[in-house]
Each structure stands twice: as structure tokens, then as C-alpha cells.
Amino acid sequence: MKAVRRHEFGGPEVLRWEEVPRPVPGPTEVLVRVRAGSVNPVDVKTRAGSSRVRKLPLVLGWDVAGEVVELGAGVTRFSVGDEVLGMPWFPRPAGAYAEYVTSPSRQLVRKPATMDPTAAGCLPLAGLTAWQTLVDVGRVTSGDRVLVHAAAGGVGHLAVQIAKARGAYVIGTASAENHPLLRKLGIDAVIDHRTTRFEDATDQVDLVLDLVGGETSRRSVGLLRPGGCLISVPSGTTGDLSDEAGRRGARWSDFLVEPDQVGLEGLTALVTSGRLEVVVSAAFPLAAAADAHRAWEGAHGPGKIALTA
Image 1: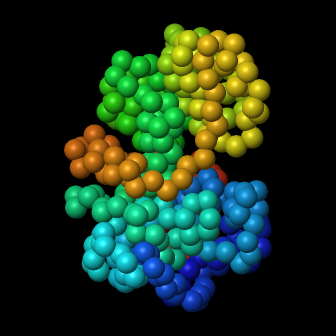
Image 2: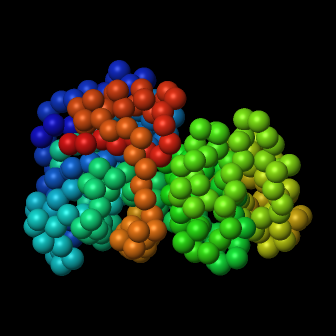
């Protein structure tokens, strides 16, 4: 099969479209013919050598949407021909920038019949990050006030919709050009982070989902109500935020996404009901993954950058 592999750390130019052995599903695994995936921050960090995945050579990628073509022993959830999506193996390498990928069957779910395959390939990692932070860690419920930083980004635009579906009042920070999209997705209030300090433009909140990190997390602590929660997704935010949040009667959490069948079922249920839309700003052929990475590192549009096979 063909796959996007890197033999060294560096810029997008280290990504090579080349022949590699096709994987074979083990017990309880399925082989998926990849139809779409996406570019995530962890892909870019792994390519550059700044993630915990240091293996060389390596086929990048964790997002996958495609068709089951082979079953390992013991698989009962799927049949050959089923259309599925998921985020297999994370944070172990999955090799999803490829024509075929294996996955434990219980790390995949069926793709909604009405969902475009390209959008499906962009949902798993970003969607699970949004779902697990809001639902599992933040326990967002009806009436909560939620602030999402980088609300128009790959995770952010999904988080806005998930929080709204759970009955929250949602505030977001985003560039002005992305405000119309966020309003279309149902956001209640939006702040232009380029012109306005967010802490001057909103009252206290029950949850802050920080998809920026660093100083943004520090500035957000003061917005927490007693009992509130600040979740910092980017790595590198220091743990002393836990003490500062605790002094305010709130809590702080860092976060790392993980494979989650229950979360994926929750996401696809929202897609099926029309309450969750995956925004795809650009799509590149898998063979042009280097160009997709260049676009991700540039001034790309809101939502996700897709890879199609």
C-alpha cells in the first residue's frame, strides 16, 4: 500500500508518499480502507519531533474514516463493508496517513449514513477532545456558562456545539472574521481576542476550555466561579494553576485525549440529530500531506483540514 512516512524530524518536506507493507489485523482488530483523515496539532508536533512519539521511520496520523475490509479473529461488532470512523491506538502510533490501517474494533464506531466521508475523517480526534473535556472532565450541564478559547478552531468549533447541545450558555474567543460562522453554529457570545481582553468582556463562568494554553490559562483562572473548572488542552501549562484555582474554590485540569467508543457514539448521535456539524476549511489528497501540513501551519480557515484517500 501507499502511506505518508517520515524518516527524520523536520518540516513538511520530510513527509514522503511511499510504498510500505499493508498491515494485517490481529485478534479483535479490523483492517480499514481509509477514505479520509485530517491534520491535527499532534501530527505536526510528531513530524517535527516535539511530541512523545519518537519512532523513526513512522507513518503519521490517528484520524480515520473508511470501510472495513478484513476482520481479525473475535470481531463481532462489524462486518466487511461497514463504514466506520475512529481514532485508533492513540497515543501509540496508528499509521492513519495510509491507504489501510488496523484498529481495535472497539475503538471504532459506524459512520452516520448521512455524514460526508471527508467530514467523518475530521471528527474523531478533535471531537473526542471536545467531548471528553466537556462531558467527562468538565461535566457540563444545562445552564452552565462555558468559555471556549480558540472557538473557531478544529476542536473549538465542535466544543461550542457540544456545549450548546448540553444546554450551556457558550462564550467563545475568535478572530472577527470567524464570528459569523460561530453564530451560525449557535454560540451565544463571541469575543475578538485581537481587540478585546476576554476577562474584561465576560462575567464569571462555570468552565473554561482553553485550547490556546500558556498565558491564556493563567488569565482565565480569575473567571472561574466557585466549583468551576479550567481545562488546559495544550501541553506545557504549569501545574501551579491547580493551586490558584483551588484558592478560588475551583479546579484545574490538564488533558490528553484517548480512544473512546462511548464518546464517539455520543458524537455521531449529535451528527445524526443535526446538532453537530464538522467544518472543513480545506481538503488535500493523502499523497499531498506535506501541502496539508504547510496549510495547517499557515493562515488556514476555521475548523479542520482534511486528507482524502
